Image (tube, rainbow over all chains, first blue to last red; front, side, top):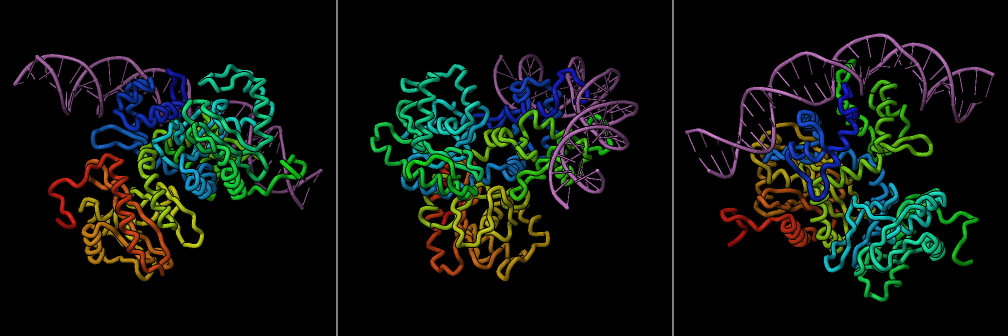
Length: 261
Length: 261
DNA sequence: GGAGGATTACCATTGAGCGGGAATCCGAAG
DNA sequence: CTTCGGATTCCCGCTCAATGGTAATCCTCC
């Protein structure tokens, strides 16, 4: 920005400021914000005041500040997430009504699954997905579905890097994963028992856009001991097709391999 | 910012840029963005490129740009809306399951109701609420609930200004509205037949925070001809209490008037 | 091939942003 | 009441990042 010192753009600082807030820290004093962002004190105060002016941040009675309603509103309204969410929600409600555990919708972003919607807060089941939360691709059923339908060049580069092993069942071997991904494409769904948390297992299916590429992964998390997990697949698939259609998808293009004639 | 000409801060421009996107325009060319915002061409391109750098905006194959996933993620994760939403959603699902029409959660912001959550996309019923959408306070059941529980100084200033009459049943007279608000406080809910659209009517109840102030309004929209609309009130009230409790509310403080002994 | 628009490249100008330092405010502890 | 540590605001000169014209280039349709 004008002047340098830090050599960082205002926009970069905005990102720092907004990033300082998360689900565990939705509000804090300006001083603390300065500490968390590492910005010079004076600068922090000036920026915060500018943002308060525009209602992008808000000051609460105690003096602490938090992300402003206006910011949430502008971003939510203009973002494509809303459209995807709108299309998906009715179907997710149906799934939720039948499956009774938690239903999530995730997209691929920056080599991770980003969950953009989630229904059901059943405390009896371990489920670490959160809205606007991220999890690794190779350790979630949603992630595997998204990865399985990515361009192979992307898969290659992703599988080339070291993968964390979360539990016994987490696959980390590239060759093994490749075979697994092929299976997912073949069967049309991914079922992963306890890949991140041993107690629960996830089932995920792909959601397609008009161009027949995968837009998102719809998934449910169920207790691992539940043996009829596979019975959930048809419900999920039907819902995913509904969502896809709502997004403008018109069925597989000719030439795409099908399950059966 | 550095240099003036327009005499506008970068932050103001950011707001302009983000505001240029809405649910009907989730993506556009940079040139069009420049037109919509009224910013100089070159400036628009430069700003957009900076934002693309930070992944706050994203470029799609066609060249059009849209609000970036990162922006949505950062704002959603850090915003207090998520907490409110998380608390409310399970109860909203229950209401939705029983009432079958659309269930919404709205807060008071800038003299309007801002809807932050909505379940149910029943096309058979006219419902103009949208997530991140706004509607006037005096013409929605949610708005009236929020207004009824606002500080009287705020009510005064709000009622002092001219109010738009949307349908026959929209109340616009301050005195009449005041009486109505008193009734809402007394009964604990607002029921408005066709205040904005004649075909549907809304029922709303307040959601309280730990300090016993109203945080939000929970409401359902049902067809107007449905005469047992009142029967929906208990469900809503129970759900609202559940949400309030999830927010840390601990029941009415002593001294607060109750419906009955 | 050419007209109209979108996008990029170039560049001189300058005041908005910067941030150190000091003063002030405020609440809690002594 | 005084002290003390932290949060917040004020002040202010420096300077380069941001600005936004103009012009060149790149696309796309007719």
